Image (tube, rainbow over all chains, first blue to last red; front, side, top):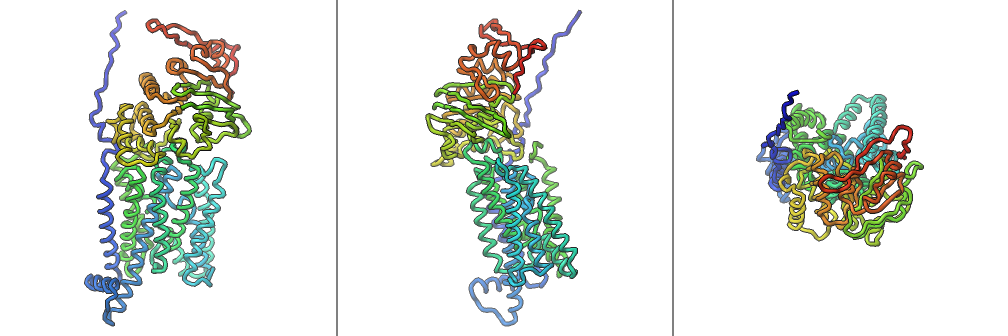
Length: 367
Length: 261
């Protein structure tokens, strides 16, 4: 019987192998500088544009007067108040909140080792919403005056955090899966409570403002809110940046992390506290602004890669720029009426995100 | 550096996964752990690289209790290749190798780069530095992880089935890289012939206990293999090298001594 010899076919070596994910990374220093400059421009635009038409010349003159302690005409008092007491704190708070949400998004994704997690997956914002709506709808803590909303939101965020922590704990520490499942399940519970309150509310206007808060808004920004939020976000960021290498190890897996001298259980506990504090503070002043904490970390990773040292250098700036512009759009599009800023972040974010994802070069969950 | 495992016991849900286990790895030796699935090899190794705290017993590096050391101090002398692979974040090869520098103090960006570059050269992955780790083949991934372990500049290396899912050339390649590192090595291995060829000493583990130990060819006797693995082993000499290789069959029906625990 005739048999043809076995032919060995060798595939040609792939020539395009060098153009795989990870090949195109942007220089972090130039990106940080560019984003810093862009943030500055965004802040100025945020102050200059708005429902009340104030000319650019006047805006710069009034900003200058406020900074140097100069004098202004009696006719400028209203414009000065708009620029200094309404727009500027709002724009600054927007930048702080954006930076905070983006940083916490990075931290939460590393903590639960899932690129689809966001700051709200732990149920913290849903918990905060219960406290905020108790104030808006039921008039709770009226004795605290203007602080009632923020304090109540923060207190209930912390209570929610403690509850999620207590339930998610196991002899093996906080495992990613338990954290996600517990956070998600409890978030549904908190949302049910909020919904009951909204439906039970007698006043239509209150329900509307509750809705505004649930979708997030910077409409209530005052200077009084800025320092605490800024300090918390900055402190949270400094800690995350300091632990960036440990986050890298944690992202590779608990075993690897332990072998590299980073105790995953401890690190996750620390991360939980830091993200809870920052999320609670941010949500207390701005409501639950979605999408920033999910999308910014993704986009930044596409640009600079997965190394948390670089991601954390860029993400807060990107988050700040995004939220300043989203807030600006939220008050310009239907001026003088305002849209919840969460609507804008979703409308802008979803297509941008899909576009970047389709462009490829980004892997998660084993592709 | 010498590694001593003294009476390690691990319990989970009432079952003893590792039971008062003792073994020693002499400085510079390559010691293999073999045993059927579920015999406690991985659990034991997790205790050694500190992913798991044993219920009882001590792991000593030159006499120092590993679990009493600061985590980073332990990671400076002991590196590990665990059996997990996370596929969530796409680090580059260079970034993965650089993680090996994490436990070290008094380091500069320049010295880190130099050490990582040397480690990547030793395992032949320098040309992959900018590639995404997730896109690599299994063999390339293991070489990168060995480079990370070398960048950690340890004295002891712990490997949990480092040759899993690799083709035969890469299996040999990985084990000779490990051997060439000159480190004190403790590795769990599945392929008995591979283990026999590369290890100085083998420990056979069953039900969380050591059932035999010694030089590979003294340990891997047909009677023991029948009892522990439930297979009939047939030693033959390699026609060219003269090295003894084992061929395996299932034991004849009815005589199987159940080895699983």
